[in-house]
Length: 109
Image 1 (cartoon, helix red, strand yellow):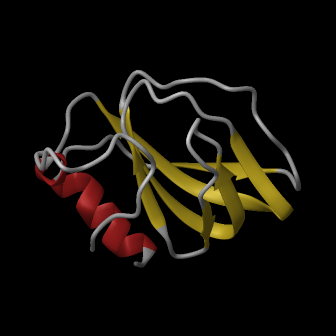
Image 2 (cartoon, helix red, strand yellow):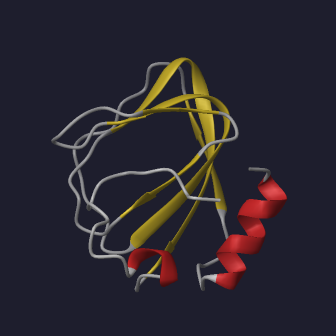
């Protein structure tokens, strides 16, 4: 996916304007939750999400969703990471499948 495609999906699915977030090398946040659905595009570096059931790693060009109220810690790889993050209050069409698990996952497009 490209940043332009990410932006188009954000607009189509009703997300807010994406915000660029930079993480220093090997930085790790305290465990926390968000009260909105998150959609993330990874611009640079390696980014690790740390929910209770694993630690998926994402590289530049990848995306993921995180449903609201999922406890996780955010972590950057050895070279840091830069992301585009957007959130919304309700699920888009892609979340209507009851088989979708409430964990970080890559956008299907």
